[in-house]
Image 1 (cartoon, helix red, strand yellow):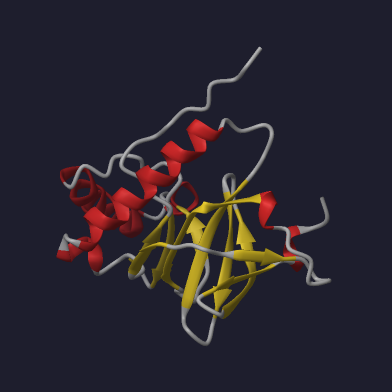
Image 2 (cartoon, helix red, strand yellow):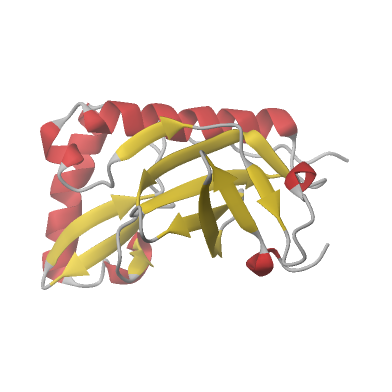
Length: 174
C-alpha cells in the first residue's frame, strides 16, 4: 500500500488531511473546524476483534472522561463515533477499504507537541501532576494509561490523549 500520509478523509462533506498515525489508526485533521478523526486501519497482523475492543474501550473512556469535570478540563472535546467516512489517496481514488471506517471517532484538535507520558516522568513536577491526574482517571474506571500522550505547559499537564477504559492485549497466532 502507498503511504498513508497522502490520504485524506471526508466526513459530512468536510475534508480532513493526514496528521499522524499510531498502532491502530490514523489521525486526520481539519484545522479550520479544529477537529480530528481517528480511523482504525485494516491490518492483516491485527485481529479485528482486538481492534474493535480497543476502539470501544477508547470511546467509552472519552465518554466517561467528558462527564468528569476535572478530566474534561484536560482532554480534547469528544464528539463521538462517526460514519460514513470516505478515505482517498493523492490521486482521488477511494481507499476506504484500507480502513475500518466503522471504527472512527471525532474529537477536538489540540495544537501542540504531545509526548508519551514515560518520557516526561523524570521531571518531578510533571510526575506529581501525573499522579494527581492518574488517580482521577482510575477513580473514573479509565485504567489503561500506559499509552497516554500529554501536552505540557510549564510544569503542568494541560492535555491528555490516547487512553482507554482497559487494555486489550493482542493474542499472537501461531
